[in-house]
Length: 128
Image (cartoon, rainbow, N blue to C red; front, side):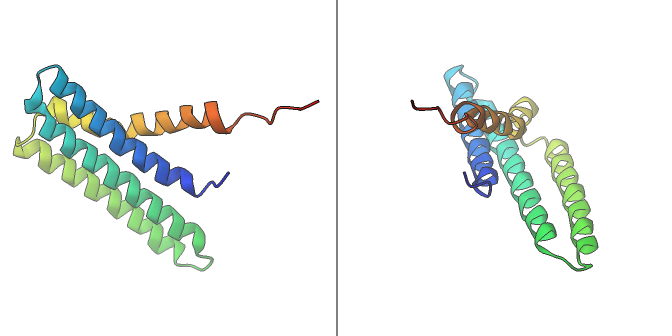
């Protein structure tokens, strides 16, 4: 099992979760919330993507640049807060839709955990 693929699978699960949530809003005749779902899902995806990039760079370094990368993580965190604040303040997107889309981050991580628990983390069966 390649552990390096897990973060990329989580990113895919985030996008699929946001798409499923948007589809559910359309099915239940709440299509006006779909742009908010898309915006929230995009913010969640980019947040996880940049977390992955920063963490991989941090562990790849063995010198004192780790502090700078940790500082970069703090800047990323503040940037996400700023983006969410600007989206909420602009009132261009429905907040229920945005929060549903942003929750695709949690749903994506949860789905990947369930997928791994069911299909990948099984002990090999003994043949005999």
